[in-house]
Amino acid sequence: MYSHPWMKRVFTALVLIPLVLTLVFMGPRWHWIFMLATALVAVMAAWEFLGMAERGGAKAPRVAVLLAVLLLFLGNYQWPDQSTAIVGMLSLALLVYCTFSSPVERMMPDAAVSILCLFYTGFTLEALPALHDMANGPSLVTFLLCVVWAGDIAALYVGRAWGRRKLAPRLSPNKTWEGTLGSLGGSLLAAGALLGVAAYMQTWESARISYSEETWYWLLLAVVVNVAAQVGDLAESAFKRSVGVKDSGSLLPGHGGVLDRIDALLLAAPALWYAQLIHQRF
Image (cartoon, rainbow, N blue to C red; front, top):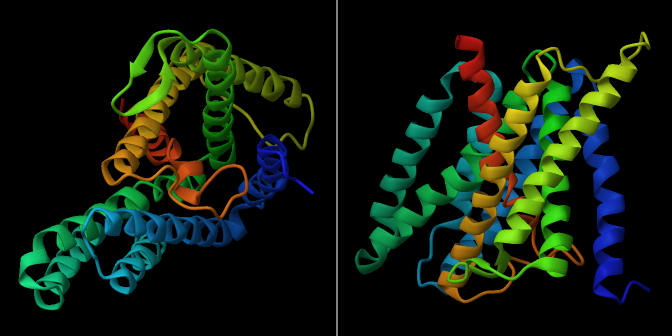
C-alpha cells in the first residue's frame, strides 16, 4: 500500500507525531509514562547501536547493556539528582562484567562499546524526562521537538533543491552547507511560530504551552538546539560509515531504524537541558 519511500515516511510521521505529543501533554501525574516511553526508545536505539558495533568487530553483552540502560532510567526516576553517580556506577558495572565475560583479546572494544552505548543512547535521552519534569516542562519538550523536526525537514528540502557545497563529505556525503543554513532557518521559523502560538493561547484559560522569557532567548536556544541536532546527525552518520551500514535498522518504514530517527535528539536534548540549567543558575 505504501510502496513509495516518501509515502512510508509520511505515514510513519503521521502516526508517531500525534503519539509523541500525546505523551508530552499527559500531565504531571503521568510523567512516569513519558519516562517509560523514553526508556523503551533508548533500549531500542541501544539494540541497534550494539548491532552496528558488531559489524565493527565488538560483541558487547547485549542483555547487560540493555539492562543498564533500563536501570539508568529507573535510577533517575527514583533519584533524579543523582544522575551522574548512577551513570558512573553502571559504567563501572559494565566494565567489570566485560572484564570477566569477554574473551581477553576482545575485552577492550567490548567494554568501550558497552559504556559508550550506555552514554550515547541512555544518558543523552535522560535529558527528555529531565526537561519534561522541569517547570513548564511540556512546553520545553514541545519547543525541542518542533525546532529539531523543522530543522530536519528544512535541511532535506533546501539541500536537495540548492545544495552544492559539501559540509562533511567523509561523514555524510549528502549534507551540504546550503542544507545546514536551511536547517537553521527552519528551526528559527519554527521557534518563532511556536512563540506566536503560545502568545495567542495565553488568551485561553486552558493554554497548554507558554514561554515566559524574552523572544531573543528562545531564538538563541533554537540556534543552540539546531547546531547540536546537526552535530548529532553527523555523529550517527560517522558511526554508521565506520562500520559500513546505511541505516541503523529497519523498524520505522521510510525512516530506517529508531537510532536514525532520534540521532539529532541525542545531542539536542542534552543541549537544551544544560542551557536551561545554566539559565536557572544565572
